[in-house]
Figure 1 (cartoon, rainbow, N blue to C red):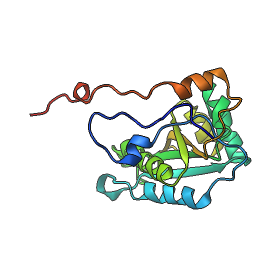
Figure 2: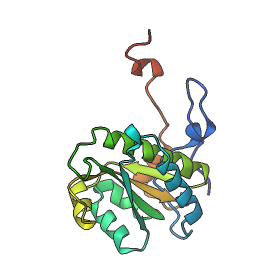
Figure 3: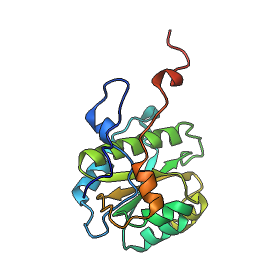
Length: 194
């Protein structure tokens, strides 16, 4: 499989290769089985993400392609995500526990869960898996499908698997896959640097 173009980020300052090279594909191989060791390694990396007071507010729903949970998640995806994410080897929901069992709010739960998803994505990439994080889904439908308690909030769904062939992809997917990787300049993100 050949990429449409080099996807390595053109960074303003040096970063780790795993960061510069990681990108979010929409093209997954539907024939290659998911590398379970690589998936478990990515989940392990997520487990070791930092969290406020070591609260570890993240939970994971792992739904492998072909399973009923995978179909439920595909149904919950919004619009364009349904067209390509169904091909991923698995869909992993990152769920934040927003309050402790006694009802005490965990103010940083979604932030910490976001860190866990970033660790997952970087480890998956380093292990040869491709990922794509999605916010376009019906979180209430996910909560219903998996009978999540009120204090468990789906934050993101990550499609994970092996990059597929670009032969035969739709024009819309081809356009998005070949778009340049861009970020605003670092200086535009810094409010104060005293």
